[in-house]
Length: 67
Image (cartoon, rainbow, N blue to C red; front, side, top):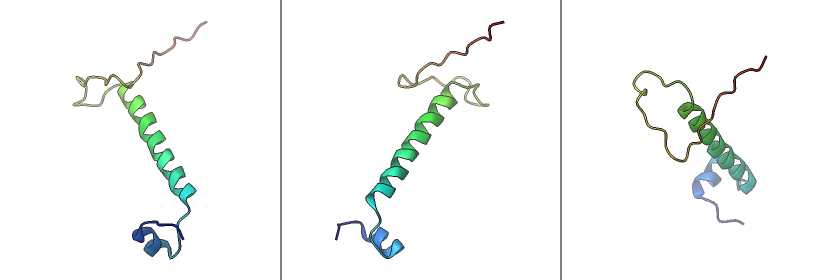
């Protein structure tokens, strides 16, 4: 038997598959990353107008529609 945390064993009653945990962790990291990029490249909400963009956030430029 794998050496998983006792909390997971108590919550599920059996060993929790590692790939389920990895999918959730990778999904969470992706969601936070995409959310940060979207937030720092959008119009800032009240109180955040003067917030500086972190260096790790890419600067996305809006494209103008061509006629």
